[in-house]
Image 1 (cartoon, rainbow, N blue to C red):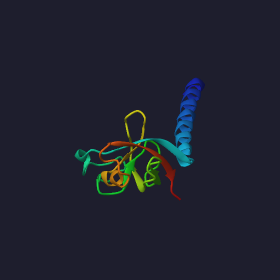
Image 2 (image 1 turned 120 degrees about the vertical axis):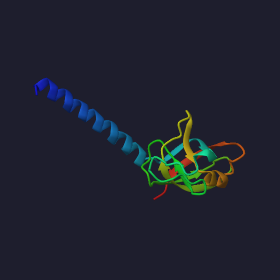
Image 3 (image 1 turned 90 degrees about the vertical axis):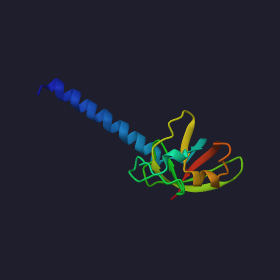
Image 4 (image 1 turned 30 degrees about the vertical axis):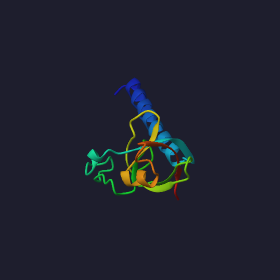
Length: 126
Protein backbone atom coordinates (compact mmCIF):
# COMPACT_ATOMS: atom_id res chain seq x y z
CA UNK A 1 0.00 0.00 0.00
CA UNK A 2 1.40 3.37 -1.02
CA UNK A 3 1.74 6.40 1.20
CA UNK A 4 -0.94 8.24 -0.78
CA UNK A 5 -3.47 5.42 -0.25
CA UNK A 6 -2.71 5.35 3.50
CA UNK A 7 -3.24 9.10 3.77
CA UNK A 8 -6.57 8.89 1.92
CA UNK A 9 -7.79 5.99 4.09
CA UNK A 10 -6.70 7.69 7.30
CA UNK A 11 -8.35 10.96 6.27
CA UNK A 12 -11.61 9.17 5.43
CA UNK A 13 -11.58 7.27 8.72
CA UNK A 14 -10.95 10.49 10.66
CA UNK A 15 -13.75 12.29 8.83
CA UNK A 16 -16.20 9.47 9.57
CA UNK A 17 -15.17 9.38 13.21
CA UNK A 18 -15.65 13.14 13.56
CA UNK A 19 -19.02 12.99 11.84
CA UNK A 20 -20.38 10.28 14.13
CA UNK A 21 -18.96 11.68 17.36
CA UNK A 22 -20.13 15.22 16.57
CA UNK A 23 -23.69 13.96 16.01
CA UNK A 24 -23.61 11.93 19.22
CA UNK A 25 -22.26 14.82 21.26
CA UNK A 26 -24.99 17.13 19.97
CA UNK A 27 -27.67 14.59 20.81
CA UNK A 28 -26.46 14.04 24.36
CA UNK A 29 -25.94 17.77 25.04
CA UNK A 30 -29.48 18.62 24.00
CA UNK A 31 -30.87 21.12 26.52
CA UNK A 32 -34.19 22.05 24.92
CA UNK A 33 -35.25 21.48 21.36
CA UNK A 34 -38.32 23.24 19.96
CA UNK A 35 -40.33 22.32 16.90
CA UNK A 36 -43.34 20.37 15.72
CA UNK A 37 -44.39 16.90 16.86
CA UNK A 38 -46.48 14.42 14.92
CA UNK A 39 -47.60 10.88 15.71
CA UNK A 40 -47.46 7.47 14.06
CA UNK A 41 -50.19 6.15 11.84
CA UNK A 42 -52.01 3.03 13.07
CA UNK A 43 -50.60 1.11 10.10
CA UNK A 44 -47.22 0.89 11.87
CA UNK A 45 -48.63 -1.07 14.84
CA UNK A 46 -46.41 -4.14 15.35
CA UNK A 47 -43.82 -3.09 12.75
CA UNK A 48 -40.20 -3.24 13.87
CA UNK A 49 -38.70 0.06 15.01
CA UNK A 50 -35.11 1.08 14.26
CA UNK A 51 -34.15 -0.26 17.69
CA UNK A 52 -35.55 -3.68 16.75
CA UNK A 53 -38.54 -3.76 19.09
CA UNK A 54 -42.08 -3.90 17.67
CA UNK A 55 -43.91 -0.58 17.55
CA UNK A 56 -46.75 -0.29 20.08
CA UNK A 57 -49.25 2.58 19.82
CA UNK A 58 -50.12 2.09 23.51
CA UNK A 59 -46.54 2.54 24.76
CA UNK A 60 -45.11 5.95 25.59
CA UNK A 61 -42.42 5.89 22.92
CA UNK A 62 -41.12 8.16 20.16
CA UNK A 63 -38.85 8.52 17.17
CA UNK A 64 -36.09 11.14 17.12
CA UNK A 65 -33.48 11.70 14.40
CA UNK A 66 -30.36 11.59 16.61
CA UNK A 67 -30.99 10.81 20.27
CA UNK A 68 -29.69 7.39 21.37
CA UNK A 69 -32.21 4.59 21.78
CA UNK A 70 -33.29 4.31 25.40
CA UNK A 71 -33.10 8.07 26.01
CA UNK A 72 -36.03 9.46 27.99
CA UNK A 73 -37.33 12.89 27.06
CA UNK A 74 -40.06 15.14 28.37
CA UNK A 75 -42.24 16.46 25.56
CA UNK A 76 -44.16 19.62 26.48
CA UNK A 77 -46.72 21.62 24.55
CA UNK A 78 -45.91 25.24 25.37
CA UNK A 79 -49.34 26.39 24.17
CA UNK A 80 -51.26 24.17 26.65
CA UNK A 81 -48.70 23.09 29.26
CA UNK A 82 -49.51 19.40 28.66
CA UNK A 83 -46.53 17.07 28.89
CA UNK A 84 -45.56 13.45 28.54
CA UNK A 85 -42.37 11.49 29.16
CA UNK A 86 -41.41 9.15 26.31
CA UNK A 87 -38.66 6.66 25.52
CA UNK A 88 -36.78 7.04 22.21
CA UNK A 89 -36.86 3.71 20.36
CA UNK A 90 -37.03 4.69 16.69
CA UNK A 91 -35.63 7.09 14.08
CA UNK A 92 -37.64 9.86 12.45
CA UNK A 93 -39.63 11.86 11.74
CA UNK A 94 -38.79 12.18 8.09
CA UNK A 95 -40.86 15.28 7.38
CA UNK A 96 -39.10 18.64 7.26
CA UNK A 97 -39.82 20.83 10.28
CA UNK A 98 -40.86 18.00 12.59
CA UNK A 99 -38.58 17.07 15.48
CA UNK A 100 -40.28 14.05 17.08
CA UNK A 101 -42.79 11.36 16.12
CA UNK A 102 -44.89 10.12 19.05
CA UNK A 103 -46.91 6.99 19.69
CA UNK A 104 -50.66 7.55 19.67
CA UNK A 105 -50.79 7.12 23.44
CA UNK A 106 -48.20 9.88 23.93
CA UNK A 107 -49.98 12.12 21.41
CA UNK A 108 -53.24 11.60 23.29
CA UNK A 109 -51.61 12.80 26.53
CA UNK A 110 -50.58 15.95 24.69
CA UNK A 111 -54.09 16.48 23.31
CA UNK A 112 -52.95 16.48 19.70
CA UNK A 113 -54.93 13.59 18.19
CA UNK A 114 -57.44 15.78 16.34
CA UNK A 115 -54.83 18.22 15.02
CA UNK A 116 -52.24 15.59 14.07
CA UNK A 117 -49.34 17.91 14.88
CA UNK A 118 -48.49 20.32 17.69
CA UNK A 119 -45.69 22.68 18.71
CA UNK A 120 -43.50 21.07 21.37
CA UNK A 121 -40.39 21.46 23.46
CA UNK A 122 -38.20 18.41 24.09
CA UNK A 123 -36.09 18.20 27.25
CA UNK A 124 -33.79 15.35 28.32
CA UNK A 125 -34.85 13.46 31.46
CA UNK A 126 -32.04 12.45 33.84
